Image 1 (spheres, rainbow, N blue to C red):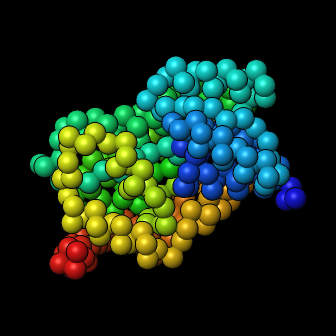
Image 2 (cartoon, one colour):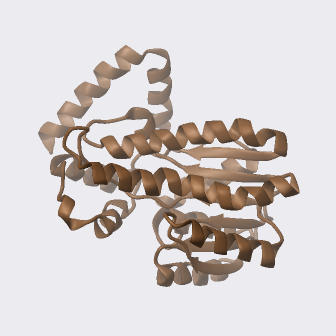
Amino acid sequence: MERAAADATRVFVTGAGSGLGRAIALRFAATGARVAVTDLDGAAAQATLEEVEKAGGSGFAAVCDVRREEDFAAAAQRVEREWSGLDVLVNNAGVATAGTVLDAPIEQWRWVLDINLLGCVRGCRALVPQMVAQGRGHVVNIASFAGIANPPALASYNAAKAAVISLSETLRFELAPHGVAVSVACPSFFKTRLLESSRSQAPAAWGNAAPQMERIVERLMDKAPLGAEDVAEAVYQAVRRKRFLVLPHRDERQRARLKRFAPELYFRLARKATEKFLHQG
């Protein structure tokens, strides 16, 4: 069994019932870590916990709707009672949305911000005080490269993930004096069922504000070179090395540099590429 990384023996993961959250829980479990496996779906959380135990870890499963402070409070109390503190908090739970600024209903904006952004805020408010009290810990917020690239017809999703990046930078400043590190992961497309799970949660009355863009996203996910396990490995290594910005995809690291140092050139190239994909979609 791999020796656990320093300050990574007690781990709390939201949205751990499937996808990237499950992969992150299993990656830490491989080090023998104790993992709080939380998810909106209690049965899915329990199934992941069983995999955690098979992988060499331990822990507990709990229902946690990241829109409910009460759920976080109950989970935080259990962590404090059973583990006497926490080493790593992974705010992973999220949903995907599609639609333009003008077409997406305002209810969609409230929904995605409540989950993707305020879910991170609630997680931090509930669990980071334990890290501050012990003088060490690590917060990982899962954002997206969409929060950097801001492609069209994913308006509310882009904005929510960009806000998670900003939140993480703010936390980094605020928590550094307390010995608590912060990372924000911004993966691009990887093989996941995020769109499918998001459709099952979103109110049917909203319809689909951008079906063509959603088909393009599905195609890019299917063809992605990385899987959830690859992104989970990048997250794990960021915790070990206390790295702030996590860009698992090499191409996206190059695009991020281009956007920073040549924003107008980036815009022209990105617009051309987007139009090409839209015509193919």
